[in-house]
Amino acid sequence: MSMILFACVVRVRDGLPLSASTDFYHTQDFLECRRRLKTLALRLAQYPGRGSAEGCDFNIHFSSLRDVACMAICSRQCPAAMAFCFLETVWWEFTASYDTTCIGLASRPYAFLEFDSVIQKVKWHFNHISCVQMESSLEKIQEELEFQPPVVLTLEDTDVANGIMNGHTQIHLEPAPNFRMEPVTALGVLSLILNIMCAALNLIRGIHLAEHSLQVAHEEIGNILAFLIPFVACIFQCYLYLFYSPARTRKVVLLLLFICLGNVYLHGLRNVWQILFHIGVASLSSHQILTRQLQEKQCDCGV
Image (tube, rainbow, N blue to C red; front, side):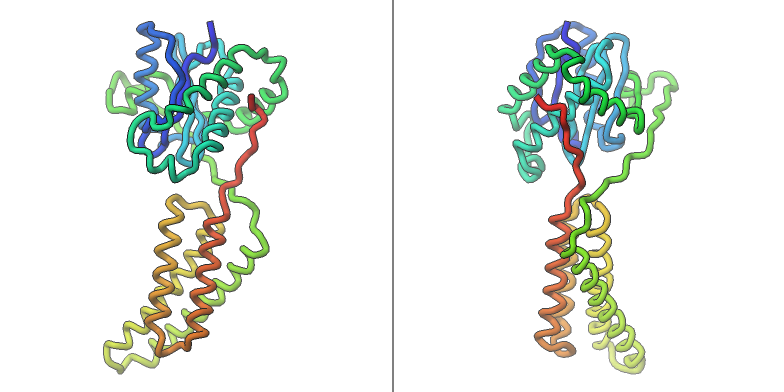
């Protein structure tokens, strides 16, 4: 009997199945495990990157990064290192074939049906290769699992997590791993310095205008806000460049819009070159934020 019985790719944020291997098993226990895999897929956003749900005859393993997760049903005899090596290989194959935009826009189950054959091919490879042939890859994965063990559930826990309370089983979760970004570039450092300088200029001008506008009419409040809002936006841009945050693209666009509108509003207090400088720095920072991605660990478990 094969050790890896079923595999699928799902979207983390809503558990939408994107692709799956062909299912040749129809026993009652296996079908029940499939049902619990679907339940677990809906809760993946709550778990760390790797995890396992253990049952009497089958185990469910999952591995996720960003908004894509790979899940597999394996026999109890399948080593965890082999299961996670398989999942990581499928993840790399899938993310190399489809970009994040296509994945995010998928609206129906199994939208990437053509990838099913790839999963089937990788599954066949792992079911028929000996552990000796992939010893180095398994040792590497095993070291990672020992350093940062996956969260361990039982198949009954998946029902508890879905609101079906059967007993008083508790789920113990480990804290999610920190996301590690790619190294900071020289241009990125420059954008940070310029952004901090623009933030300081906005703060100084805003405070100075506020101190001299206490007895002035309310129209000066707009100018004060036009300095202080871009100040906050510049600081937040620095944060987004240094640290990972979900929905970065929307946040970057919103911050750039605030900075542009604020500087256009200040046309009477700043000349055209000053406005272009602030907008240019904000645009450079936005580009650096969007091009600095998560640092990905290259997988050597490929087929």
